[in-house]
Image 1 (cartoon, one colour):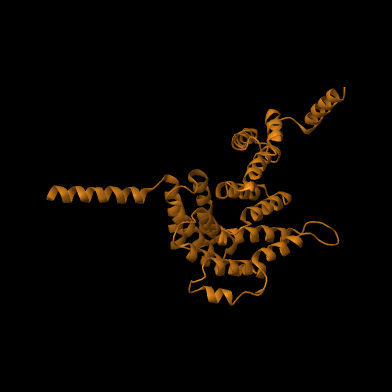
Image 2 (cartoon, rainbow, N blue to C red):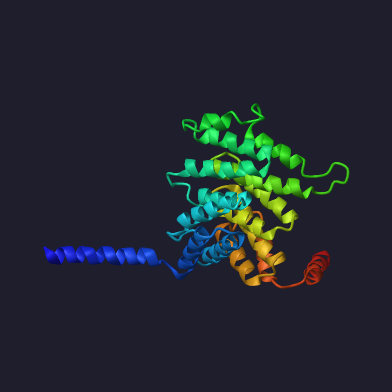
Length: 303
């Protein structure tokens, strides 16, 4: 009897110790959060954000501790009134863990933070999405009551924001409205991942991010399409454009080769397959070199 009790105690102790310890990266983030809670300040919050980003780069979203850390970081950001950052953490949680039973609570938390961003269009999209996804939730009626454009669907609001991204007189991109469009597309899909045009919204947002030269955001959106909508026609284009972005924008030839190869393996008969083959064979060559090659090939065909 005593041996059984001792073994059980040892098992619990080992389990607790492992759970408490975690990875070195996790420990650093946990300590930073504890330091913030003990003495909240901008600098303590910034240290927590920085350490969490390092943790996420090293461990990714698949690590068991990541969901809880995301929520902790969202809590810190919200307490610091950094509502856009908090919204981003909640967005990652909702997108990466769609099967968790607290999706309604976390979406409500995301909406609460978004309401501080002073964007009626964004709020309406979120309210309408919550209303559609969680019809029987006790909080739905209060959110529905806040909707300003009651007779306009969420995708129509997105279209309106998209159409107003360009200045009518100069035909130049209005950057604040373009950023709003990206955020609104993300919000619509985050709030209701099963909406029919989810992949299209993310694809258009990625195009807008590329136009704004926000390459990390464009890659994030491509990955969102590839990971969450792998059977959608937009997934093949997203993978090709991901490879092209590493090639053309970041000059990361190793990554470009990896993703071009992945694209050709998955979609050998896709419309961009020939382009991918050409690009992977000529990685690192300048535009001038490629033009000369094409001109040379063209002259051979003419002869």
